[in-house]
Length: 120
Image (cartoon, rainbow, N blue to C red):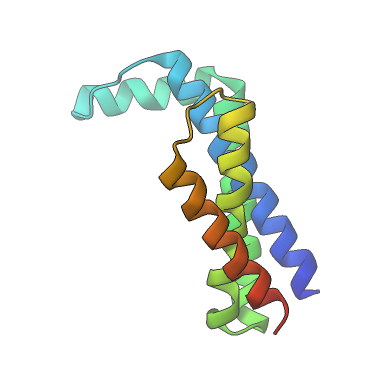
């Protein structure tokens, strides 16, 4: 059950983050003041991928809560770092972002950490 919850949380986190990034890049710069916050709420309501991103965030949150209910936090948090690996790959290949050497090396280090954690 722990692996199912972990996979659900990671998939929901990845989906949410990629959809948010995609839609917010399409929306352009937004101000953060009171009026800007209202515009962002309207923007979220008008864009279906942002609504889906919010739903995925909720799935991620509740699956994480279920995971830490049954597993140690020292497992759940580091294992959830697997999302960084997949998000970096999706940022490069789907969102066409530049991933420099330092970021790539950092992602590989995280990947080895997740692999070490999975073996325990």
